[in-house]
Length: 229
Image (cartoon, rainbow, N blue to C red):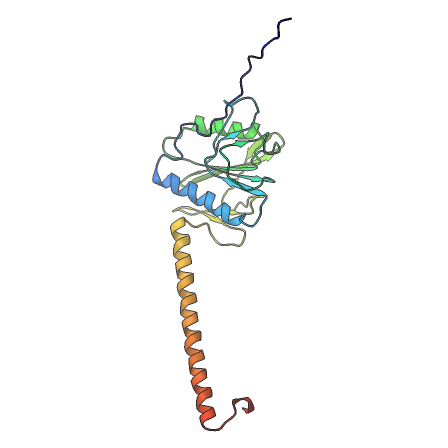
């Protein structure tokens, strides 16, 4: 009897698709800002996974079906490093929320293909921002379809509880606590300012304590018991 040898090979799921994360500094800044602030919002929840430019493979056995959202959030998945997001390894949980930040090189047909991908593979909310034209569009799942959100200005994400506000100059995104998304530099500046305020407060307290100690010492010199005052 001749044994039949299997000709099947293990499917390799690359961690890199060869495409750059961003095409310019503005696009990269927005990607980093969205991803970083989402990290902060869910920092204390061990079962919310946030990633940026991570390849997502929704179908086991097919490494051609993939997408790398600029930012994505998966509820019900633990934090931790990954080379890619293989959905069948992740409890078959698709990222519920994805973001795409446009660059001048993006074409409408390309973005429509991405939307259809997200629609087909289970995304609940999809947001697409064009920082050059200050244009924001969003889609929310209804049944099997991602349907366009009619008014994005003032819209609050059901999953993330963040609110979007458009001005003439930019997009402002508000966290659940009402504070706005900040860039890495702005966050650093706020931290420095808070540290400076804390240091100033500590110095005032130290000066006040020193004055009190001098006053107590003077009262004792005069034979006055401070506890009786």
